[in-house]
Image (cartoon, rainbow, N blue to C red; front, side, top):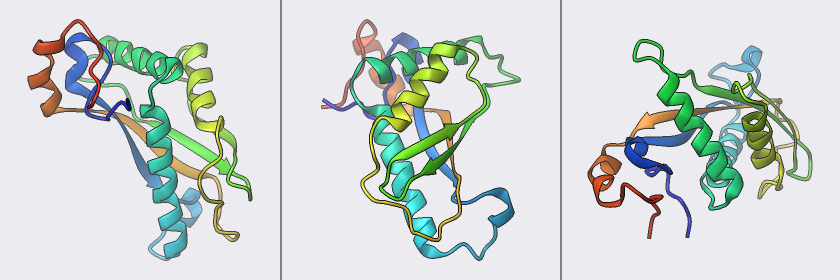
Length: 161
């Protein structure tokens, strides 16, 4: 079964969800209204693919989700954990050849995120003229649907049917 974004792995933190949101599809210099539609479409495809990889069942996604949940617990209400901005370089064959992001604060979490984003090729190669790196924002957001389901399954990981 596939984990859905609406669910997290542990107890009362089921009110949070891991969300992958596209921030931009080109370096800051090229972030204008003149971004070609093929670049935007490709960036959306990459965002969906990253989202699927980060939601997948498995030990690595579960480990990353546990770390991110701990990160939320340690954050104060005045200063929630910042979004994680990932810069990704994609080869002509669709392979994610390199990713950069500010450290998550734990080498294992950094390595896990890097592994999840570079382990498999994307379903399509980038447009040949697309500027790189591609920027993707990862963030945690409240999930009102999960709060209602949390008491019924407080001791186990929530999974979608």
